[in-house]
Length: 170
Image 1: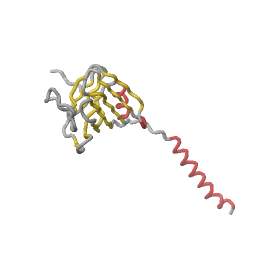
Image 2: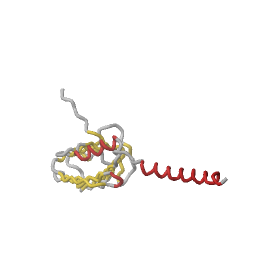
Image 3: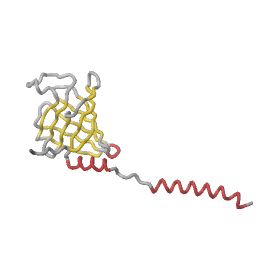
Image 4: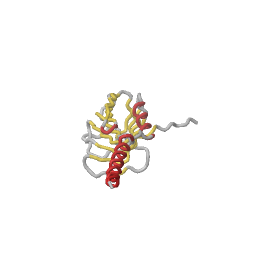
């Protein structure tokens, strides 16, 4: 009879002890996508593809089609983004009404972000209208971009980080 009473206690201890062992031995592995994003960010060789625009005034808009992006490499930042919002002065060239520029002289700082992501600040020195691009990237490749401008209201974008496409020469 004594043994019958101790069996449930032993089973309970075995279950509780085994469960805590399983929790401590299981470590989350870094996914392949997270490794790829980390490599792209550390090599400064990536593209931010915008999907949603959040102007300071007006409504949120989904961006349809590809092509609205910011391409970052070690020596160049190439921005081709739309702009919706208030401009304090008109651009000299009306065909460049969005956030379209190529900068070869810029300050680039990268810092660890929340939950293993990155906070990247890009300050173009050769573009007068754009003061700063602040990019917050998650380990899964989702990103938000805030653009601060001299002659326009600030604007934000949500999107993803992808690998630069290599164009084949004909």
